[in-house]
Length: 118
Image (cartoon, rainbow, N blue to C red; front, side, top):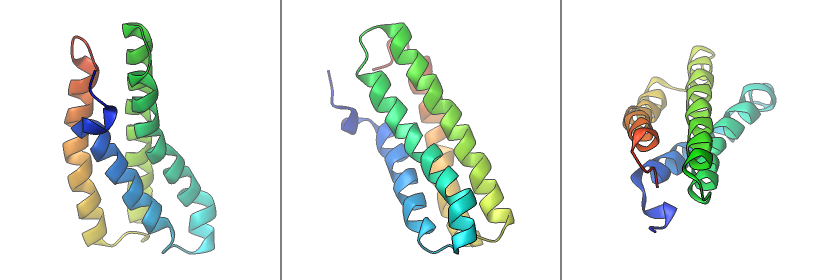
């Protein structure tokens, strides 16, 4: 079995969460303590659930964690929309994150829907 770190879907999810992690440091305390902690958790959860599912033995267990990852992906997108509306993200930063999201979403769906996702 391949290492999870060799999968594009995993690496993209790690990139998204790392980018968000670094953005947090640029925000004021109010933003960090409210939106910031939530978005870090949801973004980190995308790759964490992929990894946990990847280590499971049964197909049903794997798929359940991959679906959790999908939920965290959608939650992260919601937090990013809020961050942009609240002027925590520049248009340029928002566009860069959207590029990752536009690539990650279809790959995540394809990974979840593959006949033997791992």
